[in-house]
Image (cartoon, rainbow, N blue to C red):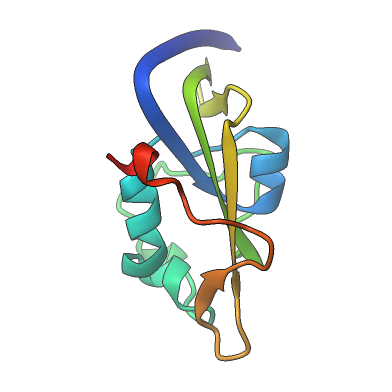
Length: 130
């Protein structure tokens, strides 16, 4: 697998489940912290606890879930904020490997299936959203 390093001069965010955040290995690309926060309320799959992905209606027939990952919805969502990442590529997949996170922010589903900031977690700092 080939590794490509990317250094950016601004904050970037990775959004995923707790295992992806813990291992700092994600199958989806980086985004701005503001876009990651917006996805928490705008993406139906993320925002609504009972919503499921329509896996049979994927945009690309060649889309696959990388080995070691699952299409199951996580019980919590994590935004990790950093300034650096690598891409690991091979002929069949690209994985994103963020540098250690400067901050980590967690959201969980409440009893009504609404996404709320996890106890003890804090919102993404306004400076990262600018």
